[in-house]
Image (cartoon, rainbow, N blue to C red; front, side, top):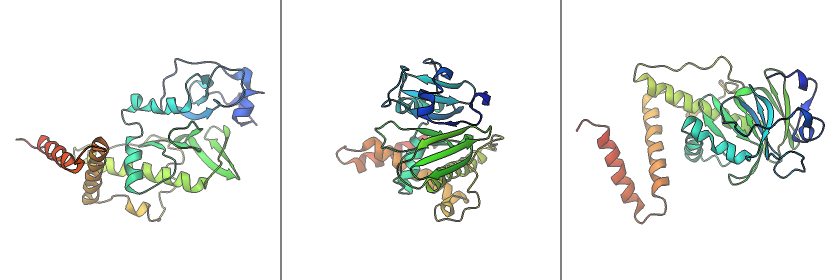
Length: 256
């Protein structure tokens, strides 16, 4: 992405819809990927463009699409086959009630506000080298010097970023342990943004990151229970159905 056009500029939705509107272009054939730096929700803002979302992308630059930020984030399930599944499972396990991020290994997208049914702005933690809160605004800086500002109406940005990084670290350590059983190993990309910022954190959450195989095994079992619970939710005697499915899954893992 050529950032020279945005030198000494704080990128906001308002700026892009006014002074920077001539720099935008339409790209409705866009397919989501890990190169997305930010998604700006403009669906409720007065605008001359036909799009509902402005996308800031590492390769393609800044453009708009008709799809909403919610629709774009839900399309990640097509890109990585995981979507929000792992994030939802871990947040339920650790009783994290803040807005649900989309975390899959070293790819982590954090929402600014709103419930799961609403559209909001999203930022890629793996593309950032700085994140600061100024009242009800959050200002982010990428490794290339791009400065993006978003509304952040509620909460503490430091805590929110910490939780996303924790979820990423937990997934990575768990997956590392699992793939090692197959004589494989994972290598991180050269740049992971802020995702390793809290490597030395000693909070109660970080102490729960599994380091022993017994811990990893327990988390894997809890993930299976989460899936079975969600699949059978609302069914009569769902606990019996869950046990039947659990036994069938267990038998599939064995030779006979």
